Image 1 (spheres, rainbow over the protein chains, first blue to last red):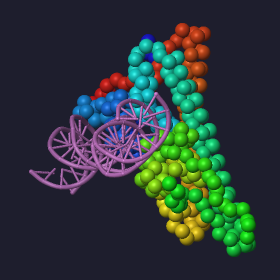
Image 2: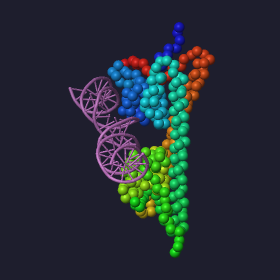
Image 3: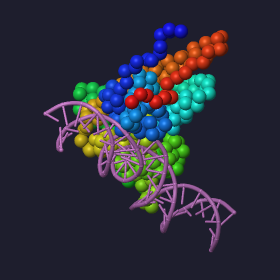
Image 4: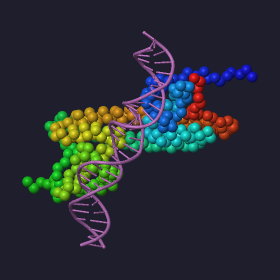
Amino acid sequence: MGGTMTTTNERVLTIGEVAEATGVTDHTLRYYEKAGLLVVPRLANGQRRYREMDVKAVEFIGHLRRTGMPIRTIREYADLVRSGKDTSAERMRLLEQHRENVIRDLAEQQKHLDGITLKIEWYRAAMDQRESSGAQFSESLASTAIAP
Amino acid sequence: MGGTMTTTNERVLTIGEVAEATGVTDHTLRYYEKAGLLVVPRLANGQRRYREMDVKAVEFIGHLRRTGMPIRTIREYADLVRSGKDTSAERMRLLEQHRENVIRDLAEQQKHLDGITLKIEWYRAAMDQRESSGAQFSESLASTAIAP
DNA sequence: ACTTGACTTAGAGTGCGCTCTAGGAACAAA
DNA sequence: TTTGTTCCTAGAGCGCACTCTAAGTCAAGT
């Protein structure tokens, strides 16, 4: 059978190149590996060589990290991926759970941001006011003593 | 002049009550105070009593913290508030700067979330596919050795 | 042959934001 | 008076996610 061989003939990257490409330092890349978030193939001399799929994995880890997933949970996900068995359902569940957490967090952050925006508007109003009258405004966080 | 006196006649809260009301532990409330984020008036026996404005301050600190402002920056803001001088412009600038940071962060998180959502959709597609054929899909993060 | 630079490991150190502990004071209820 | 609760301070400890260091290997360039 003279079919096309899948030698993939892949271009691989050194850890330094991956650091450069992804913005994750080489230190952190090794740390991620030691933490069990991914496994990277080695040359005979022990040096890591990242295939495209490995770089993709690093990037996906980035998505998870930057949305607040703790290392330990990414580790759980990675364990599922590596378990051999088909754990797609479980992995998907894990990601969906995270997705919900993130959506909730984003909404919460937006709420907190609204509180800050309100304060900024208060400042703007106060300063506009001061511009036309000569009045001063005062604000919390300072404090005087109180009766026993 | 028999005007209405502004004795404020205010209801004040103990640290425990504020913890209860705001969800910030008493430990953390003391920590915030030690870190210079706010000043709370005391009774003669040294116990804190939070006025409404102090509770408001705690809540505002919450807005800043939950949107990722570091303690040290909140400290800077608090220092401005307490400086006596009118630092409204500077405080507003600080908050606006933070606001921009948060908006940028939120957008970035959304981008990362999109990457995760894409993966979830990939899982869903793969599982749907598998349901009709009998094929298995495989995924990154696992790894084999590579030639020297 | 030697230097340079990128890689390797194990493990120590850092900064942040809490979180907890120890030891004590003060008051309220039984 | 005893017991229990809540408060106080100073300071130690913790978990997280890096981040860095030391000491060494290896390959290429001069």
